Length: 120
Image (cartoon, rainbow, N blue to C red; front, side, top):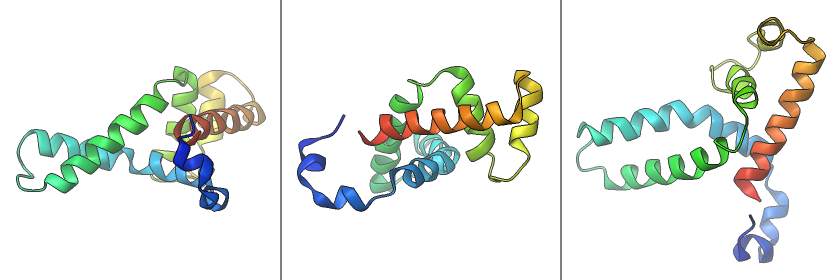
């Protein structure tokens, strides 16, 4: 859902929202680890980091949970393993018993849905 700030701010026209969604997925494990460290008091005194990590998790998790488990699995394989070119299509095609081209189409659809969930 667009906020009134997004609707009136022309700068949103210049943001590559898909790349921002990919970056958010790539940062997920780090942010999850940061929240866990904060909750176990390993990062005492880092209130700014605590607030930012919790805001990120609320923002991302809400959008992520709107995806199906298959969509989550596909995006995890591509963007949350640390290597975008890891042979994810082949692995997923075997796991899901579908063609690699179908995996690519479903990845594109899942990424579009996540991007819209995060930024619209």
